[in-house]
Length: 559
Image 1: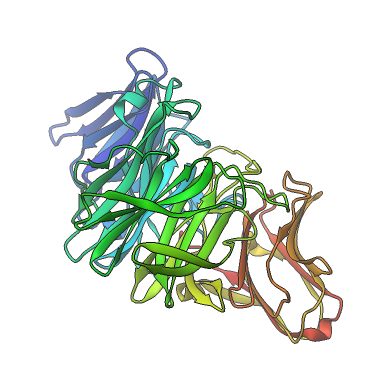
Image 2: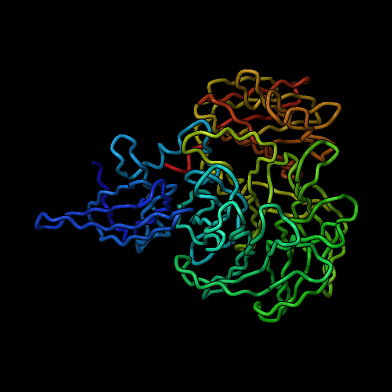
């Protein structure tokens, strides 16, 4: 039987559900006199019960699950948890005992990103509570720890010193008890929200959802608040907004809070009279909130509602960003995010320009925060085209590279944060004035930088697997991502740029991010392939227009 040494950890956390009556988790340790200490916890009957079992430091344990399924298991409770993170445990199928899994080996698979954040396994979606607090960046996120599909929502948590390398931390929030006990009859949980930090604490605002399996007028979405002084322990939640204002949809969620001068403002995603809207609330203290009016209403296109809105001051302007739920654009892209740039005076937002946040349409529910004068954004790499390929212990979803945002010439510009450069590996190609092709790129994790003397027609292959391929093409139709042999084939992932001056491209196994003209347009696209190694090929009509080109490998953040 395998043993797990607790080292500095003082708690075992497991999510366990019975497969037969009496299903349980058993933890055994030895005493100096040779006797055995046994701790037993019953698994949930109809749902995964969140078990927390105290441990002694530096002690060997045998851990078993009997007549139950364990979806996620880890050691927690160390004094330096923010630095070390949790230690994940996995079940040995041969003898049924649990062992401490190796993180680097766990992530080193063709379908797992190597430098984008992704969960240990199973489902992830919207980033929540992004902030910097007492030396660490924090990212909370929506997750289903039990499977590779959306379900009742938990909040996961990760921390980073540098926005690049992340440590996994314990699950923070679970669905409401009545939701867990009525699986398949109601749905909901801890939906998206944000963080506001001071020197002493972080305050979190989030949506609690409870309702029927099909959304409708019986759906209840309320806004709640909790606090933390150390990002390890969290207060009880208190309700701050109980129901949507008159005329608003039951879609009423995803609070984002900001301070402007001496007032607090909250924006929420919703709809007014059948038109997608971002609602504006005001507060003097951040606890008692009053509805003001819609911050903006999208009148040009039919969308069910806005989701995951953001609102910020940026480079002398104000920017609102929101995800368009149940919308398909003229290019065939589904559920894109839109940004709006304008002015904000006396509670009124006047839009001057707007555009798509990410032309690849696999970036959704972005959220931003400010640290040391930088506005930093992270988005969920979504999969609305259902191209995910499930595999044992796989993960469905990941997060974009953190991006720094700016407003220039009436457009939203985005580039990867400078910290991503620390992952630069060996140079695979460096040159100019020629077409080139690379195959067998180890690990299919690399970065490309290309500059052009003038707008140039080209095709760049970024991935291939049998009949499947993903390319970046610039021709008479403009710049766009082209996929073949997959479900998104035929959709036009087109960038809103008139010419291409330079490109910065990040390929990370199943994820590609394309940055055009210093961030004038950004496109994120998922592409699954079974091959461990990658490829890159540039075919330009006039290769002499290529004034510089570089391809470098990218190091893993999980080593």
